[in-house]
Image (cartoon, rainbow, N blue to C red; front, side, top):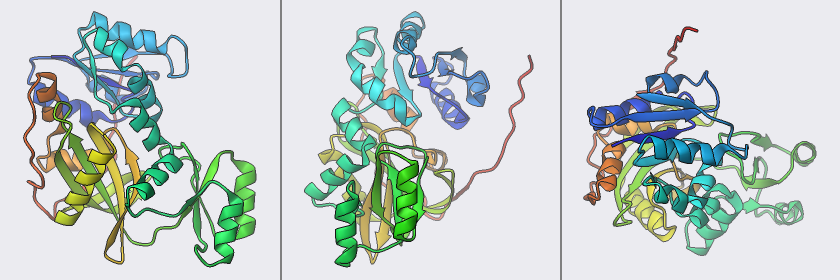
Length: 320
């Protein structure tokens, strides 16, 4: 069995975990548009490919899948998720299963305003969100929201161009600098991250790992501790089912006044997934099972609480 990891960047732990689970009965391959992506050099085989925006990109990836008998493919970055979902049938036609939700679901997760509307419609708590400054100012005047607020790209990722505005003048200045921003309530509370696997065959959630975030860096969890909460397990299971998510999902959640607010949903491996794997929550094995047409059994919360993850720097040296 061969697995292809797209846009691997510096996420070498994901490469290591799949190699460990395949146990030399297949290859873990990786792509990136930069030869200086360190995770490339931990793969069994790697490819330098065009950037995602180039016309030849999709055909290049499909050719790699065909020539290397790739059984499953997934990406580690948001901009590539829609491409994979949109062209799912083309990958399936060459024998490669994309580990991704359906296109409409991926687009909803990537568009913060669409996600907000879905959450409200289905009765989930989430941050107040505005795409109209006029509506925001009206609610500000009526006391329905107050400063500070987050300003975010409607379809941004990796915390790019996210700002905090503390007053009207600051908000207006940021809006002049960036396009397609939305205004979002500043959430004061405890932040959690959930790593979720929804079986690709049964389409039911089978594994959830929850961590309390202690420190963030560049939009990713830098330090965290494992926790368990049955009410949160139930909330996440209900949400991913209604949203029709499948495969690997990363969810950000806030706890405020003893209630949970769903914040962000990323239909891919999150940057903090190594915490889950090292606690025994094995998504690579679940993916491999599904590719073998094996349905995974539900295994919620079978990990230890109070296990800490701390990221630290490492160096990769490649000559020539």
